[in-house]
Image (cartoon, rainbow, N blue to C red; front, side, top):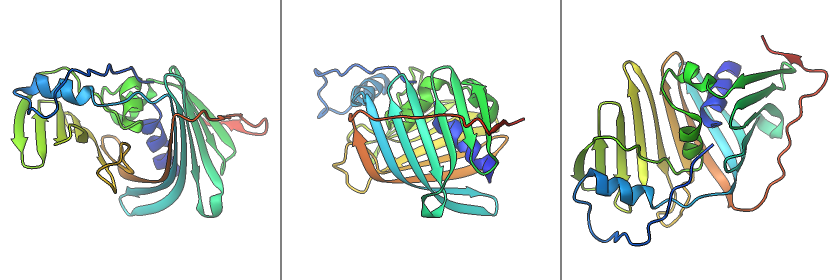
Length: 242
């Protein structure tokens, strides 16, 4: 399970680019093609400078099923900090990502690990970069400029291609993304308890590559654009993980 938690943190701790808001777009008019839909979706998202998320994470892998506490702090283009805690609030994992490195503390084994940011590609076996994954955690996954087939559905829109598939709601927000590379697949989806909420309260992540697992995050508290104190120190008594 420790390895599973490590993989999840690597999958979630990755600096994002800004998306320009296009005020001239008329969202009351349905898009005529995939390029129009992509422009409408990408322009919907607000840049988030600071983000704090607190809640629960449910991890599923084969016969393993565990629920833990999660605390995430983020500063745009700077750092993502994650703390995973066991029942009664006891921290077992702490991780931090910057634009070039990933730092990891295992409290139960009193060990630490530092890897370059591109280590995520080795784990997920998919060309997902630092920018893409920070966009996931801040709930603003940008649709890549590719050739897609557009399908209008009752609940919104579908964009499909050989490697990337998106489901978009009627209010032009991404609900589901699937990234496929041969037998390797990463998919994630967003849900909200209230359709009027600007930030989704649930994030589901599924990975099918060298490791297969599912992680469902439910946020009980979301704080946007309030400066945060972020601390990450490696205790002198901890040893490097080999």
